[in-house]
Length: 338
Image (cartoon, rainbow, N blue to C red; front, side):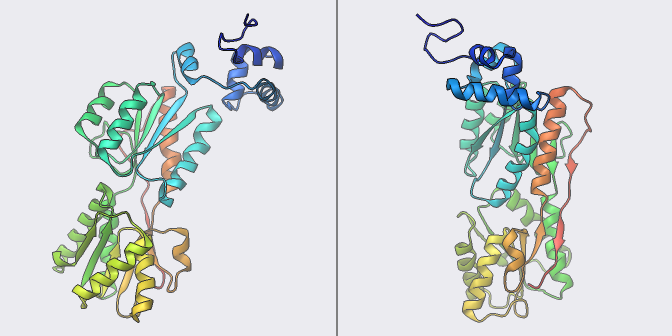
């Protein structure tokens, strides 16, 4: 026979944890969720009791009992991109002290895969969702519109004030890169890109518009690959660019890893950077400041985007008044030697 407060499965329950630690089940639940209002000594007692009993929380039962899930779904297109790692760390720092569980979905830059993740996660009635970008399939948009789950969109801005967005203008970032190279006297400017997700293409739009305004846009100098962005691919694309267009004197790379690969390839080919070809990267990854030459790049506020998006979601969950419209956190051109 199961002992009182024990599931018929024989697994220990929250009631047993509370009894062993001498607190109420509500306090035990809050302690195990890391809610900051629980006194540290009580939280430690509850955690010790849970460990000694081998207790494992049941998120579905918790959501059913409280009529509200404590899970926040974060959907990102890549776990190998340093950009999203920084964002996730910041999200965790905001949500965990509130006792929220962060569920991460990686859709590998595939909108249909993202659609499946949205469908599956919504079935668990999360408290909210943090989504990357504003572009997704019609089916995804319909599900999000009817699910009544608060959503915040990261990394991009939208003209639709009904969408809660935290990010910056990808188009303006592309335009700033173009104008920087133009100001350095470069006239044969290439855009080198990989992955080709919506944000990469919006940066291309901004770069293209700035060059067109200067009367210097050449579609032939747009070199784009659907392959995942990498240092290796950056080297290969730079070599291809020079073979096809040896007159190129400047290039904007959609990601720093591509630009880093191009710098390595330039050294192998004996191409002087920036004397022969000036380079600008994007995202300002940590290693870019240590390249030879040091890489000029556009620094994006990826950690702050995660932090502000999480805070905005918490404000929505708490029913607090919200600032309408997108939150533009901007970006910064970091000028170095390339």
